[in-house]
Image (cartoon, rainbow, N blue to C red):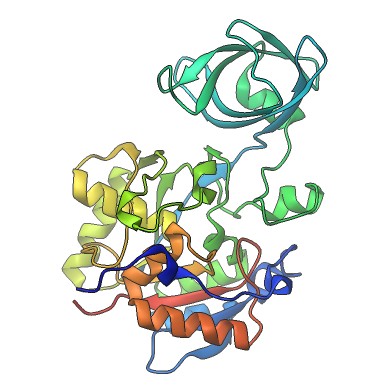
Length: 343
């Protein structure tokens, strides 16, 4: 088997192809159909015609929270928190951007009038994240005073458009700091067409963390360590997958977060928990037959995942086609449909 290095996942992307705003309508995005012998340029609203009655679409129903919070130290120095997760005891785990880290016990004055008391590092004393106690209920505080945690390659401040569109139409369980972007293309019209065609739906939950944008820094990709994210595969979804296998339909994962959730569940046997699964070429998929996904960053773990799924050479050829045909890239960009490569 070929040994892949970080440089294998580089590609030239003109900066103007990085989408800064969503398409005017969710389903008006373009769709690159990569399931046939030749790439086909379509619109996203064509997706129902590419699926079969009895196929099962699995979505990630996580909800993006307004996790970017601003405030200041007692000395007046400005800081930014990016809430990564709310722990069962109500403590908040967050990234902290500040010129000089304050000591544990410091009460930070946050914009909006609440306080965030620094308790220490997380998950241990050497951890890269920090634990805070908020003076008010964390999710309520974020909803009132937080900002949409747009990806670093989107250069504008968050707006009302982002609050509406950096969220799926079926978002349900709060906890993500990045959207499951392949699902952003679905609107009620497309969902109704899928239902009319006999395509079934199920959901999993993976609360996407800020680490999804963490760059791979080692040329030997096996040395990279993934961030940890919380997932859940409900009993109803497990039942839907079992029924799908009996009737011989195809499981269509909507986004890489759904892939990571389903394959984590298959590997661990655990219905819920934390996963840091890292999928690279050579990975043995057991759950997913088709994958709908957006276009990913060069040298990213997500580009490695789709290369593992559809085949490295095929993915790089599809990306060259997408650049040549001026597809829009990344979170607010266009989508592609992929079929799992034969083992």
